[in-house]
Image (cartoon, rainbow, N blue to C red):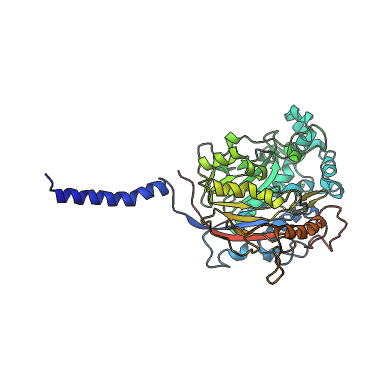
Length: 488
C-alpha cells in the first residue's frame, strides 16, 4: 500500500500532466500540423479590352503582373509591385511556400479574344459585346446545341459553353503556367464550363471544329464536358496541377487523376443578377449556381482554404459550412461593382460586412484574402481595394489611421494586414487638417464618380491612374502569414 506522501506525489504529478496535456487537446486538435509561414500575394488586376486582342496579349499581361522583368511598354502601370522579386532566389529570406491569388472574373475579357471577338471589342456596352459574339461562334454553339439540346433555350449560356476552347487556352493555361514558372501555388477565377483537352489524334474533326481558328497549327482543343458553365476558382499547385476536391476531404490532381476533366476547384453558389440564367440574348451570363452542400475545404500547404466567391462571403450557410469543415483561410475572390462614388450606401461598409465580419465572428477562420478586380468593361464597372485580413487578437484601439488599417472612408481597424491603394489617398497625408468620417467620404465621392463609364473626365491612356474615366489602379500586395492546414 502506498504511503500518503506517495499518493500525494502521484496526485501532483497527474495534475501537472493535465495542466500540460489539456491545453494541447483543446488548442492542438489531433492531426493538425504546425503552422508554417506562407508568403501570400494578392493581385488586384485592372482589366482592359487591349489585353484581349489575342491569347498572346492576355498571357503577356498576366505574366508581366507577376514578373517585372517581363514588363514591356503598355502592359503594367508604373510603380506596381510584382511577385518574382519577393521569391527565392531574388529574396533569400522568402519562405519556402508562396501563393498568388488573382481576382474574380480575371478571365472575363478573354471571351473577346481573337478575330471572332474583334467586333465585340468595339462595342459600347457589355451586353452588346457578348451578344455580338453569337454570330462568330455560331458553329461551336450549334455543335454544343446538338450535344445538349437544352442550350437552345439559353442562347447566352450556349455562347459561354462555345467559348470553352478560347477560355481554357488563354485563362487556364496562363495561370497554370504562371504557377509552374514561379514555382508557387496560385488561384484565378473565370466563368466557364468544365472541360477536357482533346488531341487531334483522338478526334481530328472535333479539334478542327472547336479550336480557335487563329491557331490553325494547334494540335488540340478544349471541349466542354457539361452544359452548365459556372463562376469557378481554379487552384493550382507549383507543378501546374489543378486541385479538385475528391468529396472525402482530400484533393485530386487534374487532369491526371480526374479522367482528363478540368472541373474547377470551387464554384460560386449565390450568383449576382448579371450572372444569373436569363432566357434572352444579352440578358446576363446565364451561369449555373453551385450548391452549398458541395462546397469543400481545399486543404493545402498554403492554407485550409474555403472559397467564398464575392457574394458567397455574405452568406451564413456558406461560412458556417466552411467553419465546421475546418477552413483557416477564406479566399474571397472579388469583383465589386463600385467603391466610392455614392454616399447613400458606402461600398467599403458593405464589403466589411461580408468576409471581414465572418473572419472576426467565426472561431476557426484566421485570415481572409480578397483579390479585387478593377476597371470598366464597356459600361460595367469594377472597383475595390484588394486586401489581406486577419482575425483580431486585441480589442485595444487600432491607433492612427494609415493606408493599411482601413478601407476608404473607414476608421482604423486591427483586422487589416495589407490593403491595396486606391486612386487617391485616404486618409489625408500627415499634417493635413483633421477630417471627420463624413468629410472624408464627401472628398472621395468626386474622384470615385470620375472613374465611371461616361464620366466625361478622360484619362491620358489606359494605364493612367487617377480621378478620370477608367483610371483605376492595379496592385500587388504581399504578406507572410502562418497558415496551418485543417484538422484531418
